[in-house]
Image (cartoon, rainbow, N blue to C red; front, top):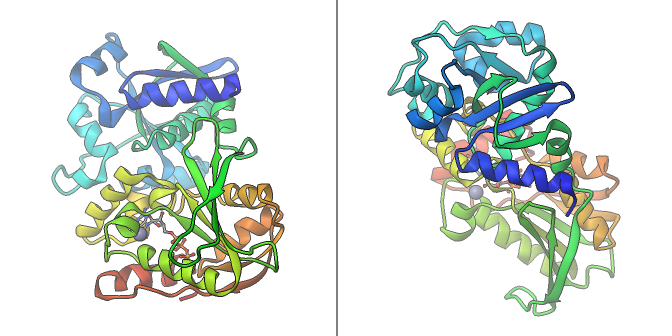
Length: 353
Ligand SMILES: Nc1nc2c(ncn2[C@@H]2O[C@H](COP(=O)(O)OP(=O)(O)OP(=O)(O)O)[C@@H](O)[C@H]2O)c(=O)[nH]1
Ligand SMILES: [Zn+2]
């Protein structure tokens, strides 16, 4: 593991434990503390008698009435000036939209320029996302913390070039006894898997990129189509003679399990899957398909046939040098509970359903 990956990993771990982290970019530096984990003691220690501001993504800030200011500046990281009424409870409500109905947000909120700390701020928000936390931080410009990491190390952490195939073994499965499983590791990241079913090297292989969905894959959730798509894909690949299923640890379109469950709580309040992600401060889809492309290349595949309804997967693979000779639709598991979810995919994220 490189030292860059190590320092990013330590910073992710510190943030997830509720400790402050210093993010540097040349001369610029900020100290940050995850709002959702802060308590009165840790915030007081962090502030040291001063007053920390609040750092949010542009997506979350747009819900605080800062849309116009943001659009003008084209910023991805937004600094909100703390005023005396913006106490810890209010900051938590600013961070967590699930509390929006219980704690109607006051305002007006005022954003302040980040200046030379803009890149460090963007990197800090990405650190929170890697930690599976809400991208909402207390921030002190120029502040100190025990753990420090550079913005560049955080940016490199997300790159998938360092992907390594670490293990490959026979794994007979129900749809095809001749199946192999391969495991990949990224420094500090989760393990990603590939199932090589039948004879994938014989023809242009049929491929499925499956993003993990604990609720759908394992628990039989009816809110989405993931579990049924997973099994339909395995059957289709086996029936085709040979192909690959990539099982990508990208829970919740890359926002992580807890944040996906927060998105579900927002969906219970009436927001659709797209608005729920945005209200939480995330992009509509946080996944990185370069990861899948690198896994396919490591296994020796350059041209594939892809099972998907999602044009972004085709574009994402092709941008990384994998030729998609054919796209085949994958419909499975439509029902009363996921009707609105599938309609949203068709109407708002361009799915060909
Ligand atoms: N954030 C969020 N993630 C969800 C929701 N429902 C399902 N997911 C996640 O969405 C991902 C499912 O993605 P895929 O099966 O690859 O589906 P897709 O991108 O729509 O594309 P195709 O199925 O290939 O057409 C999994 O990571 C699920 O955990 C939701 O409401 N919110
Ligand atoms: Zn699902």
